[in-house]
Image (tube, rainbow, N blue to C red; front, side, top):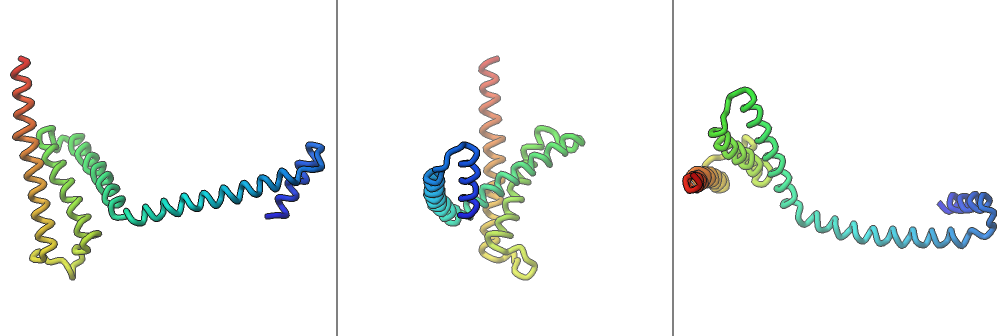
Length: 158
């Protein structure tokens, strides 16, 4: 690297007509080393942060990907007239929750293998209960509260 730096300095010095360009090269080399050291410190701290929060980052990515996948599935169902607006919200909730439960079973709990999966296991029971509670809660909130509030607002304005 030093040889290329010196050759670069000689070429620049010959082109500009300055014979004393070596102090400039030294300044560039020192600044390069300082920048490299500071960059290494910043990246090392960020890599440590990412390693500590790896599970949280993966969960957010799975959530985003499953949300997009569910939306694409619903758009295809609407395109082929297999779902309408009233059923699509239920399908969205159920599909999203099932994708999430498959992720929980496979990655976090590692319960989806044929040998280990047991419906009577405490972890799988808790995940299925969480799935049912989430689906029921979403459906209740969507149908009972939001639809009633919207209908009351529409009746007040009419």
